[in-house]
Image (tube, rainbow, N blue to C red; front, side):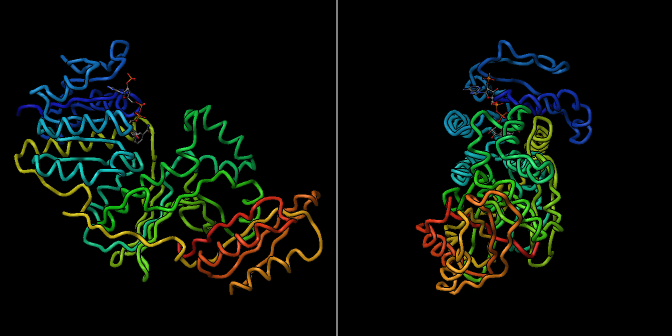
Length: 434
Ligand SMILES: NC(=O)c1ccc[n+]([C@@H]2O[C@H](COP(=O)([O-])OP(=O)(O)OC[C@H]3O[C@@H](n4cnc5c(N)ncnc54)[C@H](OP(=O)(O)O)[C@@H]3O)[C@@H](O)[C@H]2O)c1
């Protein structure tokens, strides 16, 4: 049977991983498909200096992506460039040429994936995007097909390997955030500018995509409250440990009686939950269904080969549709159409919270803070203070019972002017029920 021809644009981490798998695993792929999946063209800006894996046969090499997209021999274009400018041009051009697309681009899909899918439907081609969330974990396939018969109630995800690497190192090796970040950069887990990872933006793109699949709404990153991990310090793990908890950068999407609430933020989670054992650069996603209850997905959230597997598996799925002549037409967003519902503000959520203070020690501090909380009908749960010699920036923690985030933020704002506080209080939700 004739091969299906693939053009790969972008030969960085993901592109080179996918290419190596396509070359090395070609026979397995042929056996599974019943026909060969052939790499017919590859493209990157610095193509002249790229060493390609052996066994690919005759192949077009170019620095101009247009030569891939417009090549009549190419059936599927894999966009593995990243960003929102050239990548969008590549996808638009491929759709015009009626070529199906495989992409790993979380940013572009989170920002305008629904529009790209509408264009793709009109052109009668497919859009596959498994690698855009959690690299090696096939979470799209799960939401799109595996548990599509269920009604999703909640998603809790550790979606950024870099921040998880930093937080688990702080917890288990008692090291500082700065130290762990420097190590993550040395190992190539974190970029020179780590903002996208540690400020939560990368995880927010991924949660936007997962929420669209799970709830069928056109969710964009701007709809999701985001807070990074920069303010978490070593002492927070000590206090969290005393409470039987740990701290993770958690993406949550929950259907509540009031509406859908979405956030990416550091949260306390029970030490006993399976999510607390997602260590290092791994990702974990917990999905709660109305009928099927809880399912959990774990694996490498990034990396050349794990993400390469996701890309190659997408290429195989799309190739099967092309070869059979009957596109499956399962929407990549798991819903025929995405609605225009907007999530409600995180201020409406009710949770117990952890408040960590650094104060200049003096009598009456707890009474003053408790008074501010009581004025907003917020009940104290516990006060924790570990021994410390430094009385000028003494850390201690107050946990409060279930309260609305709106009331909690009002209380934190009211505390801002207190002259004994060395820095604004750190407020983290306690995510129970995991
Ligand atoms: N890295 C991961 O583990 C991971 C995981 C999941 C998803 N993703 C997503 O996968 C995509 C690719 O990420 P990556 O880490 O592989 O990026 P990368 O290492 O920076 O690779 C990007 C590639 O695109 C090529 N490129 C850039 N501009 C181009 C242009 N105008 N024309 C042709 N080629 C161009 C680059 O060429 P030169 O090298 O020749 O400059 C490079 O080969 C991104 O959307 C990313 O978010 C990455």
